[in-house]
Length: 366
Image (tube, rainbow, N blue to C red; front, side, top):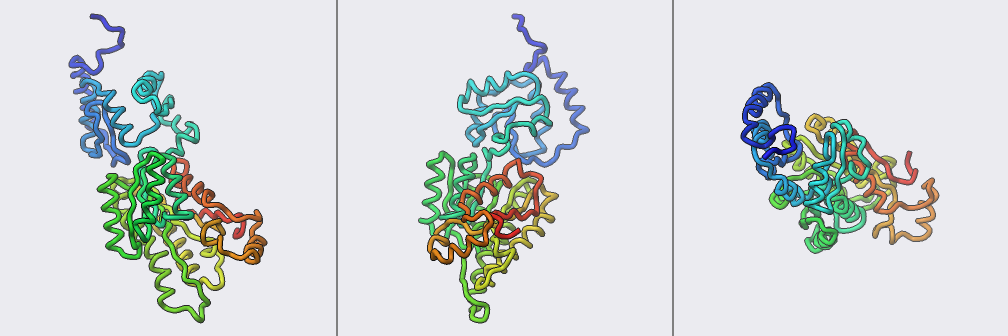
């Protein structure tokens, strides 16, 4: 039977072509994989760069497991498919298998940068860890990452608190893991990341949001109050960054965002411990960014101003009016404002930004 095709692709007649391809590929160096590769040969994720050439050669003459490949990628959290090259045949086939999948077409790899912002902001297939995610800013960040397609592990000081946010994430349709963790405890943090890898297989994103306050004037501050704040806010971020970086360095890809504070940039009376912890976080961000850049990992900080949370809700009207006079935009921010900044930095849109401190404070500090 004659078929209207340009060549007998994916059949035994293509074995000589596969052998020639193998000769060419022998001189090609394969870099570390930044994401698992699902080929039509096996329809399973491959993270071994040593097998890439073999799989490419096999694809020339092996049967196509297209349906199984698409379904496997969907099961891994992929929601958008980009077809590179002329035509839209493959995009159409994806839609026939998974009607809800998003598709796009570009002529070459350079065209990927011209895709709509929504595609490049997607976090489909990513795994995120958000510390201090039981309420306020941390909760909103965790929910935003989930809405954009990420599976999210959330931590809090109690399991019940973490579980509430995890339940909301699961209602969005993403996988969630709730963990009670003292981020100041290095062993507990090591166990945290082991649990995430066991549940999700990897870590792509870390948001260090866990923090406490123990306010008081310098001359009256107790050693215990100083130590507690530095241990959670700064050492905790260090512990998490160190563990996440081990995993991300192997993958040669990752995004780390540290949630600082405007007072870490400008200071604030009665918060010498808190200000020191947040200023230290900025220094840690810049140093880690320089160290980890060669591994494909970006490290940035977001420094919120006064945000409408449970902590600011208890402020008296007089105090709120006083603070408002220091903010050119004349309003407190919302947790969504911080989530917007984090989402941008961890998406492909923020891939060329590292070591940066993104101030989200309504102009309170410039």
